[in-house]
Image (cartoon, rainbow, N blue to C red; front, side):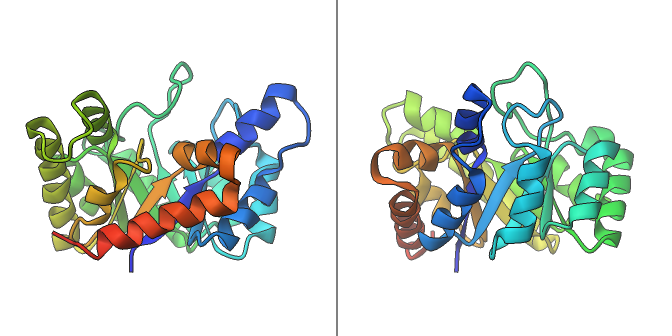
Amino acid sequence: MIELGVNIDHVATIRQARRTYEPDPVWAAVEAHLGGADGITVHLREDRRHIQDEDVRRLRELVHIKLNLEMAASDEMIDIACRLKPEMAMLVPEGRQEVTTEGGLDVAGDEARIKAACRRLSDAGIMVSVFIDAELPQVEAAARAGVRVCEIHTGPYAYAFHALGRDAESAPVVAELERIRTAGKAIRDLGMRFNAGHALNYFNVQPIAGMPGVRELHIGHAIVSRAMFVGMREAVREMKTLLREGAAHTG
């Protein structure tokens, strides 16, 4: 069954705007769990713009569902992950000036370093994921590096969907969906798990949820945005319903 990982970074973004103690990301994680989330995702950025080290420590201690730690493939972040032992560590590119992650990790261009990071994390008992664009050379490099999960960057699809009529049957959107579908098949053929995420929301998620073999979607900004009006628990429940409906029409 398809799973939903809820990214709660932007709960911390609101807190950090005032440098105070609320809203608490741990409370958000509990509410997401009660709404049906299968996992919690946080990105501990090198500049600590939202999630803080103490948040990750408390989430690791208190959350009862799996924790996915997004992180740069840096020595500092690998040390933190090996100490806290989240169920999954997802290696992502990171730029100090970006508003959000702007593209997939270039595993093919930095294969030796990614392979070494995978080895350290795997030796600590952590499942390793990489966030990559829907490109076959990146999928193949991930397999060679020892990655167990590839999360395909769905941003180009989401942006095409929003800009070109909100129509899943428009030619540019169909082309992006086909790129993701092809990459997902390659991931599964190479024995890795196929996940997806980035810029997915309540209007564009179902064509991705209906992809053959997709295991888990990671969604954050849309859920936190909806939660402002209906609450985190209900926002997660609504998204989980959409995922299940989409997965029931796999094609």
